[in-house]
Length: 354
Image 1 (cartoon, rainbow, N blue to C red):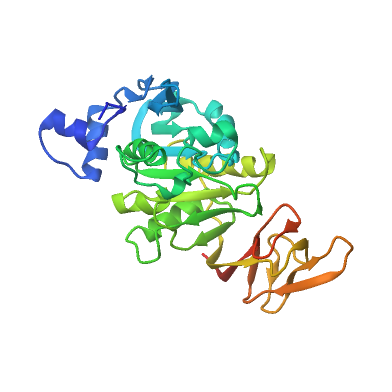
Image 2 (image 1 turned 90 degrees about the vertical axis):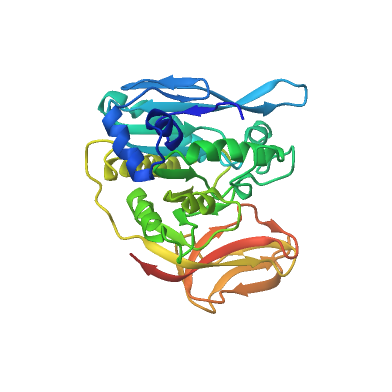
């Protein structure tokens, strides 16, 4: 494996003292040896420095190498390591909008710890503005932890997972693709996971106001990284075509909330109660036609309430769909036209707060 990443990791510390060490010991020894130069791909930053570069992860069809945009923000003072990534789904751009606005505001001379960033994970999908990697028709956030000898998506997942697992905390920035969706944070490790409370705390610190606390599908970074002992969340910053400045700003605020709460920067984060959905119901259309919603995003719904109606192009009613459970209208499709069985909306269920 080519050397892609060098920082104060368990491997490099063992090379220093010849002993195997726990994650807590790594933090302690990082403080003892001080902030060393951190290298990620071609980006290299000493204490109090920031640098950007590329992380080479493969070749395109003409044999040209390609790399992911990366950044290292190495604090003047020792501390924890935060890993952030965006655009693991190629049409979800709000996350890179957050990074574009947040990174210039970070001053490494006043930062404690290190921030590692991969700005665009799904290189191939980003180039063609598609959700899935067109090289292997794979959703990148179903490929973790990846494999270095696998498909295109699995190789990129392996490269980014190798970086992510050097961190103490992970923010995997997403959005609801091009649908309309609440700004929310997803905790995907599952309620029985040993890091469930830590992930909930990280979600609360980010502070979108809404949390989906439901075990995610295999292959998600937020499923795989907690198994390595790292609290991880998926901030889902709305949903749009292109950029949504309101959701992006919510994400910027969330990043700085996390940085303050975990002592990367000076300041305090007032933890506010989050509305939590413990379940998620999806609704499809029973007929083809045009959708008309009877509820707005974020609005409470009761079992039996009308969620949407389907009509013909001439306004003739074809179907009415009601909620199966009490909850909150969480996500809706953006375009009104639907075919039979096509996705229309989602309701967050089993609502509480914490």
